[in-house]
Image 1 (cartoon, one colour):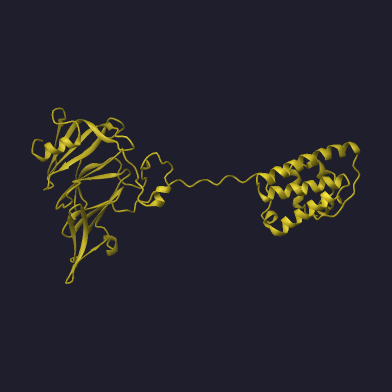
Image 2 (image 1 turned 135 degrees about the horizontal axis):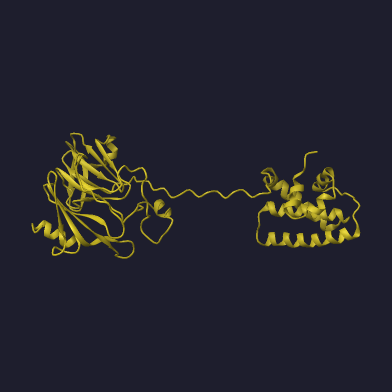
Length: 352
């Protein structure tokens, strides 16, 4: 005969002694509420009554703590085995317990239908938080040429003849012009294929930060100080920690790791600074790009904590001044300023 699940119930509840006293058909009969008789010594009955007391306490605890229905059901069936062993299968208490167990099985058949495993299933592995870099963080360009910045990539597009890059006070976007006027649209709605794309393992920064009207070149550098910033509520709720506004994350699919250089508005790299960044004292920060795109400034320094995850590159040590097409001059920062703001002013006014 196929072993009835009640045998496993007894094993799981520690009532193995009781099941060893019955044949398989007797165990099945007890599980169905049928009285059984067997020869049990008085000494064994004493042990079984102790087991009954233990199981009753266990069942009460399960009910009080709202344990799973399966645990409660298994304990009930184990108790019924003990009652039969001591000749009390027809006692009011045993009959009431059998009725309750039958009701539980009929009402929640999944208690048995889902099967019983002696070894608990391995806990399901929590999927790692995986950011999706799909939100536009800014647009640079002029006319029909645009560079669209995400957090870990930059895509370069040539727009249709009736679509133009526009910059107003505090905003940059694209519009479609027609006889009826201009309508702002998203580049994604045009279903265009980028003419070029740069992907990075770390977050990327673009200079000039403002204005974003660019006819020739942009200065692009990766950052070791930031990570993925959630944009939607769903992303914010997915952060493993609320201590920072971002999650430290490197995109393993990015083609470029450390990068700092000058890129055309069509996406072609025309110069790259060969520099290995490392925390906390060997970091790069793009400072400024001349409006004509032919001269740029980069500083190297260390990590400066601003609190609440607003770290920046400061304590400037060396400055790298690039001039088109491939000239670069390295100068000591001492005497020019200690941070990016001071250096930006000197660069913009021709003092650097």
